[in-house]
Each structure stands twice: as C-alpha cells, then as structure tokens.
Length: 397
Ligand code: PMT
Figure (cartoon, rainbow, N blue to C red):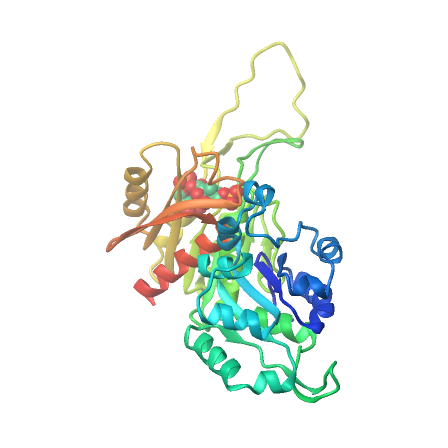
C-alpha cells in the first residue's frame, strides 16, 4: 500500500453530483496516513453537507474567503502554506476554468494561487462537457503548469449518458495522490538514520535524557523512503510513530545506539545523525533504586562514545549528515562540529527557540557543508526534511 504518512492534504470539493463520494475519499486518504482538511465551494455545497465532511475530516470545513473567524484561526494563506498537496475532487468545469485562468474569485482559487503545494485535479462532469475543446484546453494549460490530472472513468453517468467523466474509485484517487510523493532520487541507496533521545540509567527507575521527540528524524526517515531509499531507523526514546517500511531497531542508551550503528554502518551509503545523544552517562548506575536521604547526592558522569565522530573516522565512511543542536552561537558552534567531527554536512538547529527544535512540529535550520551555507526557513519538519535532502542530493549525489 502507498503511504501518505504525515502528509497534509486539502481536499477541495466543487459542484458535481459525484461530490457524494467525497467522504469516502477523505477516509481513504486518512487510511493512507494523511491529515485532511476540506474546502467546499458554493457549487460543492449543493451536493454534500458541510456537517458530513466535518464529521469525517474532524476539522471545520473551509468555504468562505471572507470568513472572519476562519481568518483568525487558519486563514487562507495559512491553509495554502499548510498543504503538501491540494486535491480538487470532483473538479467541475467551472472550477477548472477559474484555476486555468488564474482567478482568485473564491477561497479555493485563492488558496491554489497562494500555495506552492502540488495540485491534483479530478475532473468529473457530463461526458460531452468533458470532451469540450474549451475544457480540454484548460486541462492542457494546467498540465503545462505541472498540475496532475486524474483521468475520469468511463461508464454510465448520473444524467444517463455513457462516456468519460465519472469520478474514479476513492482508493484509486488516494493511491494516485500517494504516488505524487514518490520519487527516485535515493533509489538503490541505503540510509541509516538515528533519532530520538537516548536514556542513560541512574538506577533501575531513573535516567538522564533530553526533550527529543524523534519528529525531525522520523520526517527524514519518511522522506528518504518516499525518495526510494532503503532506510534503517535506529531509534531511542521517541513519541512519534514508526514507519513500517523502514528497518526499525530500538536502542536506549548512547552505548547501545553506538553498538547498533557500528553493526549496520558497513552497508550504508548515507548516515544521518539526528538523535539527541547524551554526551555523558552515569559511571556506575546502581542495581537497586537509590534511596532518598537528606544528604546531597553526587552522580559521577563519564563521557559517551561519539557515534557520528566514530562513523566519520571509518575508512569506508558513508556520506554523513550531522545535526548541531545549539542554544548560543549556533552557526559558529555548528561549523566547529562540521570540522571536528569531519562530517560532510551539519544541520545547525537553534534549540533555544521554543517554536522550533525539540518536540515541535516545526523547525528552522541552516544547511552547512564545505561548499555552501543555506538557510532553510521555518516550516513543518516534513518540509524541512525534504529541503535538507534536496540540497544534499544536489551537492553530493
Ligand atoms: O527529535 P525532535 O523533537 O524532532 O528534535 C529534533 C532535534 C532538535 C533533536 C534535532 O533537530 C537535532 O538537532 N539533533 C541533534 C541533537 C544533538 O545531540 O546535537 P549535538 O549538537 O549534541 O550533537 C551533534 C551531532 O553529533 C548530532 O548529529 C548527534 O546525533 C551526534 N552525536 C552526539 C553525541 C554523541 N555521543 N554521539 C553522536 O553521534
């Protein structure tokens, strides 16, 4: 089955009798792992109720460009930025014409203009309307702008005509949506990614750890898989779901993660160290729980092995991307890590900003290699992962 894990999809429904299939399209997209928000045009609202769509998508349906409340919460520009893909299904002849001519006459057309997300259109209409030269010219215009057109099915139509114009099966539509995210830039490549927060035992019930959720690392796991890579995901403590298309290996402490990475690194062409690895561990963790007392307690810490450093020292080292989590002098410290660890790329991450970094859905980073330094502006970790990989692939592969 294809995957839409962590993908934000806008399903836009315009005026066609086949709008009755929309709740099922939402369900199928959700089955594939997508988060779905709905835009209902005035025409679409003649065929399907806002209430059904809200119940299935579990979000307020967006329909009005001038809605004061909506503009306060998720306005049309935010909606445009949120989306990874906009699917118009069913797309009426009128909506197709408006989008082809670049109009911003309602919420849907405005969001399409304001978004850089991939656009997919599933035309659904009477067979004669579908064959009309004007409609076909509009579809050709959209195709020339990289819009993906889902070819309608042929058969008996609601009006009694027989021909092309029926909205395809919902699973087929969801599958075509998922295929839009599949690329081949990393096919044939083995990628090992570390993620999450290592946990260093103090005693059987206590540990030293940090705030890493694994979200940034998992976004890279998911994107590498979509780009065709075979991914080994070596994770410590995480709060984000695993991707069952990766080889998932659980570790806990920095020592365990080190051992696991070293065991699998030979077969890898790319290593991405996103894990927040504890630099120290307790020298002598106790076997029994430490009892409370009025005395102060001193824990002796000893340095952990540096996984990234040790991988970079290998004679047959893979291409290595490290992350530098910094709270001050971010760029300077990150550049030092690039040099000291001798990795190919370091991603500078300012973790002093509560809106990005640890345990957040968004991030903002700087891609640094010997040859370049590129700011990647604030966005979802999914989009940040995509940008990091695109810049990396362009420079190194
Ligand atoms: O998981 P999230 O909540 O989504 O948060 C993402 C993140 C903030 C954890 C991530 O973007 C990030 O910055 N990861 C690096 C965390 C870190 O440990 O940074 P560092 O500057 O201490 O380490 C530098 C690099 O060396 C990292 O690639 C780290 O994985 C690696 N390292 C560090 C110590 C060690 N003993 N072994 C290592 O391999």
